[in-house]
Amino acid sequence: MTGRCIGSVRIALALVAAIALAFTTSAVAQRTLTVGMKELPLSFDYGYDWSEAGVWLQSNVGDCLIWRDRVDADYVPWLASGWEQLDDTTWRIFLREGVSFTNGEPFDADAAQFWFDRIRNDPQMLPHRQWNFVDTVEVVDPLTIEVRTVAPEPAFLNKMAGTGCQVVPPVYTAEVGPEGFGQRPIGTGPFVLVEWVRDERVVMEANPDYFQGAPNIDRLVFVAIPEDSTRVAALLTGSVDLILNPPPQDWARIEDAGLVVDSFLSNFVMHLELRAGPSSTYPEWDGPTQDPRVRQAIAYAIDRATIIDVIGGLGLPTQTRVIPPMIGVHPDLYGNVGTYDPERARALLAEAGYAGEPVIVQSSSIFLLQREVSEIVGAMLEAVGINVDLRIIDPTTFREQVYFTYRNDEIYFFATKNTFQDPWITMLGYMSDRGERVGWTGPEADEVDRLARAAEVNMDPEERAAQYRRIQELIMAENGGPLLSLYVMDETMGRTPNVEFLRGPDGWLWFGTARID
Image (tube, rainbow, N blue to C red; front, side):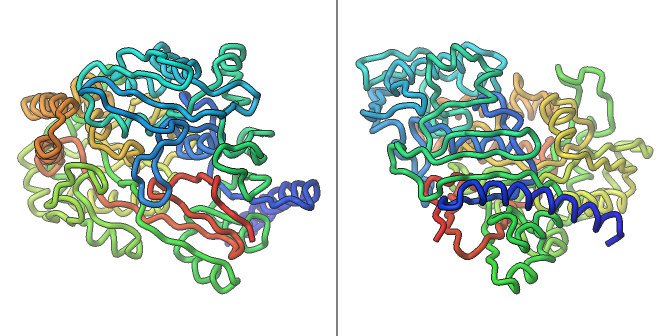
């Protein structure tokens, strides 16, 4: 490590230590948990920030009507006390009695209706298009609402527990608007936001009146530490109590210091989206991956087994983004390394008339070993004759210029999780009205569109699963489609041994039941 790098780490550690000391000093008798994060939210408005940090931290402030059990991921009543399906398009949801938002507003049927309408009436909200399955929401009585869907909705519970599902207080939200709510959110959750310094720290305090019981942790502090080495150093020096995804080379050092490294299979799938044509967000795009033979060549140039070996086994190979516990997992694609055939890749490139045009690969360092895997993939593509222009973009710029704008070039390198745990959302990006990322058209794309729309309203689980299995075959890059899945990611966590924290099957950082002994 160079002197300049060592100096940068020391400065960063000093800042983290100063923040930690300030909260420790100001809360001597309190149980404070400090978490080192790669990045922090851009907004605390549940509908305006879908970054992992945003979704995770927002869930500590707000609650959903229906959510996932933190152990087995089954759908359970949360702010709701139960539900009843009256017919294929009508659901009655019963609400908990005696729950209030942390500003004193009551949680009731009017609040639940307001939350639904807020998302459905605001096209700027990120979940807007994903919640357009709702036709009407009626207040039956103060603790009951009736939701009617536009069509039969087999994934109703999945969607109710998905991104942006946190209910908001009507009066406060209307008064402050999206910008005000994004800076100072109010919810019914286990914690209350008390301070947010953008790109530096987030401070929350326990909600003593939380309807599921007051948290064991009194104060929750999230500190931004973008560099992996600095996060590890902060854990080792005691400046933080928990960090995400410490690099494998640091695990022994962490454990030798008497600390704990937890590892588990996540529901993130590392994958490549191959742009097949221009789209509404990028109408001027024109690149070599519009030829399906080039997309096939890219697929056959990738050796998943070698990637898994190089990253130390920290993942499960997959040729699909549909993974358990979703319906329709394809037994021939999930857990499969696929076919690595560089000679076939070269032949396909020659057949397509590929003449060395640059192929832009846009990636980042958001996820564990993303940079390293990007470089491995780039080398594999170059080995079959593809002129790779690999661009590793910092997380903030990547989200602002590539992720949110849908202006990705030939290869978009990312990891995606399915918070709804149902294939319907995975398939949205390959449908005719949602394909901004890939710009895919043609007979196969039309078949995917037809099958996806049919599966969205199919109440027969077996038929629906078969439809999704067929879609997975069609969208594979090996078959000329726009998707090249690589592996399901392992995630890790470094922590002090006195921290008890169960990271649920969805991987969210929800600290409502965490403990410090």
